[in-house]
Image 1 (tube, rainbow, N blue to C red):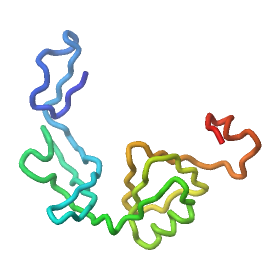
Image 2: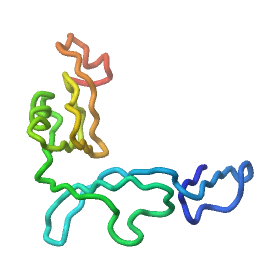
Image 3: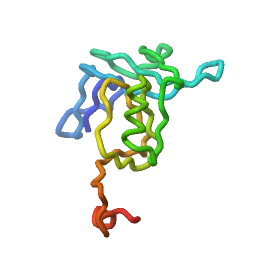
Image 4: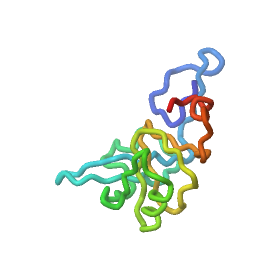
Length: 141
């Protein structure tokens, strides 16, 4: 096991026990996460890039970074087309993907924050679908 930036990592050295410890994390940016403030307003917290860190980012209070209002996000569904999603991105919205498989016929526009839930997956679509094609890729119709 490798412990990077973990203040209380288990004792011992490689190879017995099989632990490697690195005192500080050289560079890290945590994943964005949903937040709600005291007034009930939802947002997405985008943590800052941190260098030479150890421990949790929220130990001394809020994680350093910026919060983007959820109102600035398009909340996509698996049934949304690539054109719909790209249209929202062209309007300047960020993107939040809800759980599901997104079969997209074109890539997403760049330049916006794209967040996804743990169970959202994007994959290219092979249009037009051939008979039996869905089953051949391991999916049911």
